Image 1 (cartoon, helix red, strand yellow):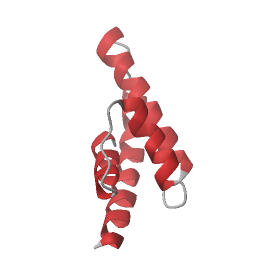
Image 2: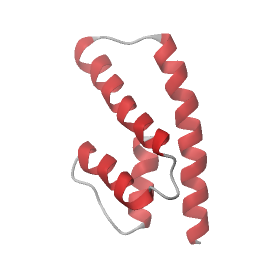
Image 3: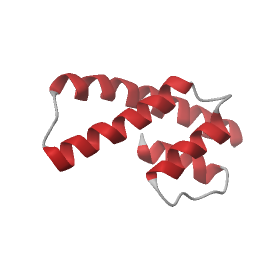
Length: 85
């Protein structure tokens, strides 16, 4: 989802400086085309990745849930970028 969000941002000729800026740019630039629940999924993925990386806290259930959301995020991102071509 992180790289999909970056691709979306790049498609608007912007670059992010942090994860926070990336998430906020999704809210600012793509609210009409990107379901707010997918933006929240991006935020959740960031939090879960940090928990796994820094605290060893991870689960199969969270992984499956976010994989499903990531596939949806990818599809929507491809559609948005495809509209620009």
